[in-house]
Length: 225
Image 1 (cartoon, rainbow, N blue to C red):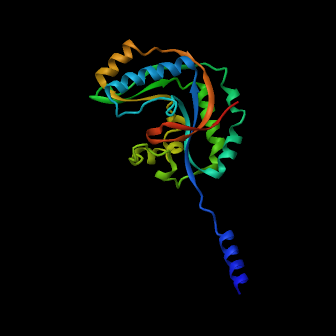
Image 2 (image 1 turned 120 degrees about the vertical axis):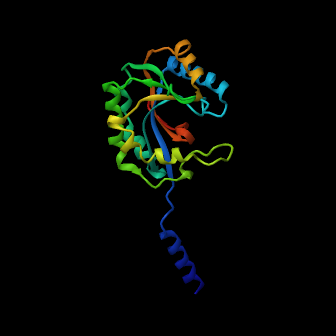
Image 3 (image 1 turned 90 degrees about the horizontal axis):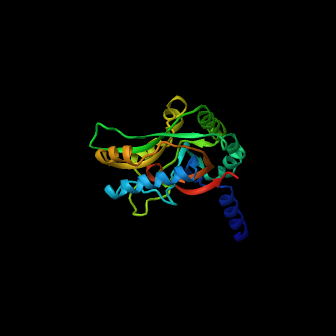
């Protein structure tokens, strides 16, 4: 009797569906050293004025997003495999940092380095979506992200942005950029004319990161060879 009970219990639990862990990922390009350094410099000056905004560092790396999405964690090796070899299609191409973009009609604004949407970058963006689309799911949650160190909840704008990325922020709406954070417009006016340098650069790598709050790339999950 006891053996039957143990057998039944083992069968029940072994056949029960496993709880699937959903993670939020960012498929992105890491800029080359000169562009990376300029991003850190601008962000540091912004942080001096507004310590509450995003801080770029080794755990919040400057990047150009190609795709944000939710996937099943168990599918991550398949996603990484699908992206294998794709970096070679753009590693020799030049990218251009065009301007420091922000909303000049506001007292303070979110700022970013606007990157030219050239043909090579747009094709790469489209190819990444094509390759990852079979693994995209919609049912992510706050737990899908790298959690905030202070215990504060993941922002609502982050929670809604990720599942809408392909539909609302891709293809003709694709807006390649490097996020810098929120600052007073007067400071951004000064940074735009005195510090920002429009430069041509190349991508250092194609990578997959685990997303944190505010679209920050926080934990490296895969990097192109």
